[in-house]
Length: 106
Image 1 (cartoon, helix red, strand yellow):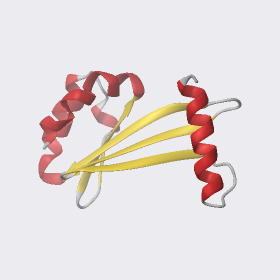
Image 2: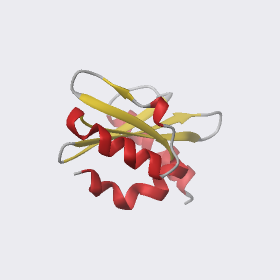
Image 3: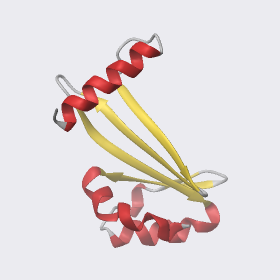
């Protein structure tokens, strides 16, 4: 089964198990030390698409995250912050370039 078919099947199964209608978006959240990673996909007409990865770190590591995003050619002007954390969103293509070095943010 292709990846897109697997996503469609398993997200549908999770929705059924939880007694929910088919979602228009689906997110998985991970916590690695003080790094939070959210992976979000949107449902298109026939498949799940537009995968986005949002990484957040404590404010004191904001500069490390900014440097990390710059290193992959990401747009730091899209980064956001709240009182406690700094957030950066990456496309699937950017994520594939940096996912192996994410631990450098720890």
